[in-house]
Amino acid sequence: MNLTLNVWRQKGPQDAGRMETHYLKDISPDTSFLEMLDLLNEQLMGEGKEAIAFDHDCREGICGMCSLVINGVAHGPQRATTTCQLHMRSFKDGDTIDIEPFRARAFPVVKDLAVDRSSFDRVLQAGGYVSVNTGGAPDANAVPIGKEEADKAMDAAACIGCGACVAACPNASAMLFVSAKVGHLAHLPQGQPERTRRVGAMVSAMDGEGFGNCRNYYECEAVCPKDISRDFIGEMNKDFRRAALGGR
Amino acid sequence: MNGLLASLGTSIGRKMVVAVTGLMLLLFVLAHMAGNLQVFAGPEALNSYAAKLQSLGPLLWAARLGLLAVFGVHVALTLKLASENKEARPTAYAHQTSVQATSASRTMVMSGLLVVAFVLYHLAHFTFGVVQPGNHELVETLADGTTRHDVFSMVVLGFQNPLVAISYVVAMALLCWHVSHGVQSVFQTLGLQSARSRDAVRKASLGIAALIFVGNASMPLACLLHLVDIPSGN
Ligand code: HEM
Ligand code: FES
Image (cartoon, rainbow over all chains, first blue to last red):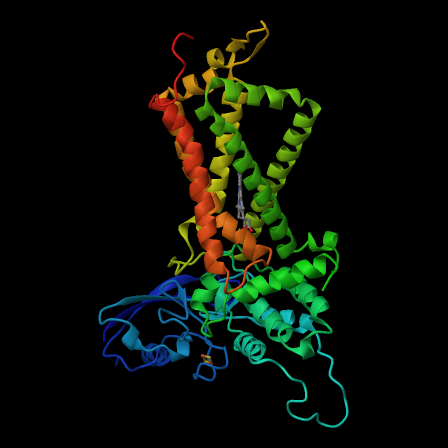
């Protein structure tokens, strides 16, 4: 495949940045998107130019490190798929592909396509602890949890914290991420003692990081590589409403 | 952060106020429409309904001020949220697209501001009588010799002007557009829908929006087409 790539280049956080066009020839459709960028970087270095910085780690779709907004869609055109698991067969020979970083005030660009997502870590920290009894290891299944509840907790816990929800939201809102983190504990007995405090603390931390406000567009759900449902946002809103009204 | 007041300082708390005020505005729109539909029942029905409202005196003014406050809070908060949202993404994407957001959801500020413009025009037209002063001065003389504001004739004659009638129909299309996202959004914002109910909520939202359009647009259109007309001999 021959491709035209418009890639965001930005020297550092203070640089204004701009799109830069590169051409890549003879790419196999079985190449992954990140391998394609590796090949582009080899080509650039061969020409004595600086390689393009982008984030990645596991390349197995589990760590949440890869990012990229590809033709305007976070993690590219394939639903429920991280950029590292996206392959060039999702594109056509001769395509022009626009590649940009996740854009949000709370995700400042470090360099080129790499952004700083540590705001997510701080929101998680604000969530605090869960209470667990000390002593000997508890028996397996000592705390019975219904299958439906366990499934919901697992669905929320599938969030890998990549930040695609923020990147895709027209308002750069982090509600899907935060609601998944609130949700996985809200569906388990271990999450109950701090449930009310947790939702308030995490929402305040989210606001403090400068994410935008949810307007129920559901673009987040459409790009989430783990298919986290908008229903978790509704559930978090409900928890928040109860906390605000003094109930639980 | 517990407590109602503290929650108003957060994104979700403010969104909930937008949702509640939006719901109140929606209830007003529905009640207003139900009252006005009496235009189809003729002059006596509409004019005595209007006279009854006027006779409420201070109560009417309390309702008007309350409505104004609700409207003001809804507009002020949504504009504040919108400006925060703009700040949350300082650099726009070079390639803009959306996967599943509806166009109605993406144009809430635009449709809302156009509704503000319509409300001002509507008040100038029928409440303050600035748009068509002649029609606004019409009075009806009752059998016992007393007079009252002839709302029926004001409305019917007003809508016989095609420009006026069409502007109302267009405005109702915009309101319908706004509410089609608005109602379902309320259920999500207040955490009142679940995976099971959300499709029904979405359909109900579209249904209420359609109802508002059909009900409200039917009045200017009926007058324009003389389906509702000034009784002959008047
Ligand atoms: C009769 C008039 C109106 C009705 C019935 C109405 C109703 C609603 C409803 C039900 C919502 C959903 C709340 C939610 O997101 O949970 C909403 C949202 C919104 N309304 Fe209105 N509204 C009206 C007028 C206006 C006006 C005049 C504006 C002017 C700016 C406006 C701007 C907005 C915006 C921007 C949102 C989205 C808020 C957000 O999610 O950030 N609305 N409206
Ligand atoms: S690199 Fe780990 S999820 Fe993509």
